[in-house]
Length: 126
Image 1: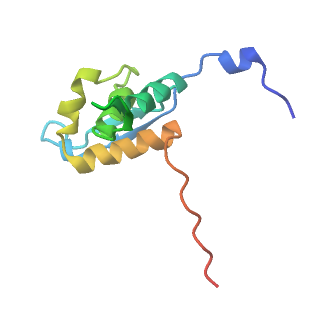
Image 2: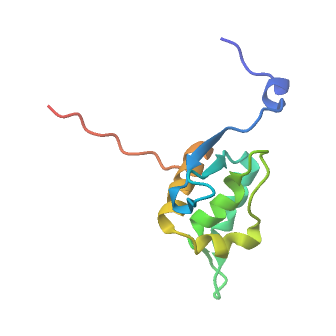
């Protein structure tokens, strides 16, 4: 067994990504469009999770899941060069897109970024 050293951990690695079909966006010019969804960095995950909490009028902090999927995709949807496709200002417009498409891509972003809640174990049938 070898323990990782600082240099091993901090060495640049290309981010993991997955190319996902987006049939909802198909056209004659592009019958099989794809979206590249990239794993978030630890910093991006922290920012994203922090963005889900808002201060209410009473001064109390509340969890606000509004635009969860769109916010996540603005941090995870990249082009073929790894550049973000959307900006934070695109959240509302992205959230107005086809729900099935946005949800499917957000699930990929969650999985790649370690954001999915642990799934309950399926009980073995006797």
